[in-house]
Image (cartoon, rainbow, N blue to C red; front, side):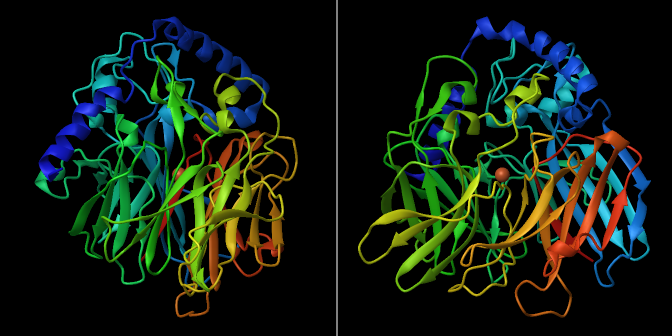
Length: 501
Ligand SMILES: [Fe+2]
């Protein structure tokens, strides 16, 4: 299939994104809004999923506690769903909210915060209309307009990347939206090459040791099969965009990388007839996951492995040792719940503390062609990150939020975890303080993997404040070196990236 034909098929498939009419469930969005308002009054921590009316926040100086580490200076950018409600209608799926990008500017002189909604065409038109106009990926929106292409539904709400000095807000089914790095004003969707306009640029690009970036775009989201493999230079210029054929459709949210290979794990699913994408998409645990091991030197080729089904959104490090690839993955044991996390909270209903989300290692034997899962200690975790300086034949230490008490159904601690020895260091923020992803920032001048800080965001709704903590990555159980707190709260996000000065 030639390139032009491939993209034309891809974009015509956009009709499958979320457009199927399902009117029966549509009227419930108003009940969801009422239910959430009641839930939020009872459970202040539900502020993590509240609606954000404002188009921007700040800049606001944070109140500092502790001693800011010398040498830690730059900006932590973060992204997450924030606009959940319009005209009395509330989305029922967390992934549907329009994206708000945050910039935490940190340094010895202080910490400040500002945030701004990403001005996608969807957000801008809906602001003007005063109601939701377009289909969402997880909620059936009543009277939604037909979308012309995938970017009509793009909410740019999942992650951020700083590539070649440019700041991007990322989603998984459409274009990267470029933002002005200081003001966070939206510049618009990015076209890496004219014939690739609108092609999906996923939310989890990975930076290689040479400074270049790998990413994928999934055609499954648009109803087809196949992956687009992106390669960008350190300066942000396109080095390659290659189609990788896949025999069947499968869902993937992120991928893993060794020095030589990209690893894509496709989770099998079946579509039911009606509804938004995540209402129609049902994981098929009776089928194996198909795993593509793709040489960076030939990204249009793959060696395929089958492995027992696992629902995985996020991978940690991957390394190659003795002819085997080891890939760290956070596996969810409830496939249905994994496709709509925090679903009860989105309706304002209390849900149990998380018990799903355990580290497993996907082991791919390059000699025998066999794949299997290796188990580790059953600590609940998500959003694992690591020091990318770790050599490619050695395991990395993982840094991840974890849940240690059942007071809130979310993470309330952070851990540093050594999967080889099943050993961890832990810091508890408090039973009712919600903890998000903690980004690893190398200490300037250091060379040894693991020497640096963890910068993580927090929500302390009982005290009406969102904040940020800094920990020494080698001494997580000592707790934060410093914290910075704001006089307001905002909804939780998903992923961030730190840009040093
Ligand atoms: Fe993610």
